[in-house]
Length: 115
Image (cartoon, rainbow, N blue to C red; front, side, top):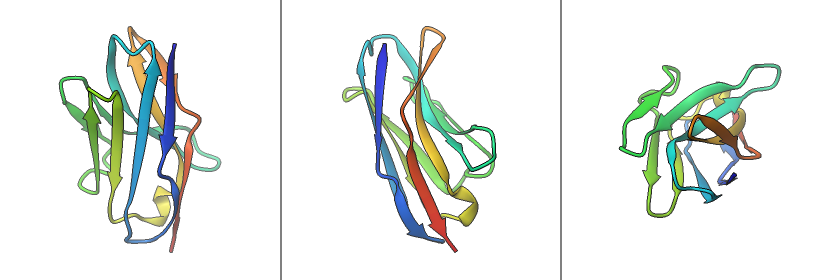
């Protein structure tokens, strides 16, 4: 089992920035990708960004150029720097890790962007 704990959500004005962090613990050996997904009210959960243990990144088109994902393998942590936030970025953001093909999820942290 992998436990994931997110932090850093909150309320921010449009155009502002937030940084989300996620720390993994438990059976962390073998974790390949880590990343962030989000779910807005009434919507399905969607990918925001992922990063592999080797540092390869993948971003949703809607956040590319505004968000930056980073990973600290030594600390088993992943972060998401979110800049130029828009009202449509409002959602619960979930940390994700994939280990031997199994997905693990954090409980989520709410990001609210006011216009």
